[in-house]
Amino acid sequence: MLFRKKEALSTSVEYIVVGLGNSGTKYENTRHNAGFIAVDRLSQRLGVKVDRIKYKSLVTTCTIEDKKVLLMKPSTYMNNSGLAVTEAMNFYKIKPENVIVIFDDISLDPGKMRIRRKGSDGGHNGIKNIIYLSGSDRFPRIKLGVGHKPEKWDLADWVLSRFSEDEYKLMLEAADKACDAVSLMISGQTDKAMNLFNS
Image (cartoon, rainbow, N blue to C red; front, side, top):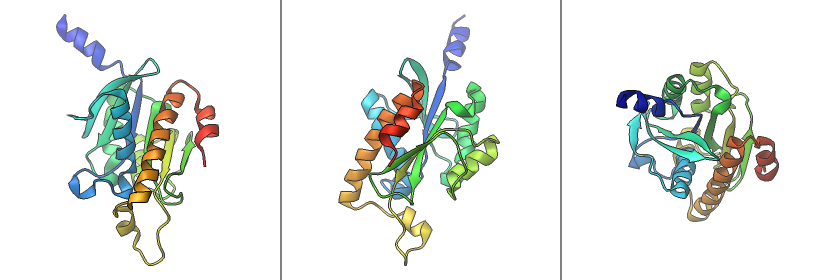
């Protein structure tokens, strides 16, 4: 009886909110970890800790807009994000439309964000892997600006570089807006979120 009760609870997740990034202190607060930063801000706001190891990720469950939500920070490294995301999707039988992915975008300035209902990978390896392994590009996403790559920089070096102090303040402001956007999207108001926050 107890086992059934636990099982029923464990499969009641309706949405997944995943922030993309790379695990480890080496990568903390780098541009590529914008998704992790946003999920950390969301967890702080909700009073939960993303600290359980499951689905090749650090995870926790919480309630947003009366929906049970799984917060995820994959520990697979960016290029294999799909391994973690699809494992959780398959376990909870979550459709792509209920998986909100938050990640960095080098085409946007720090502090800017853009919400999309679906779309291509746009050259982002983490998104590319999720699309490839899930077989769908129909998951909503929140792109957080991390700044355009300077001409003389290698792309990998740029996304793994840390924000300046001023850039980081802007990043946190955008992450807070992303938290608000997540609430709207889960409540079925994605259009409102796009109108409010797309820049």
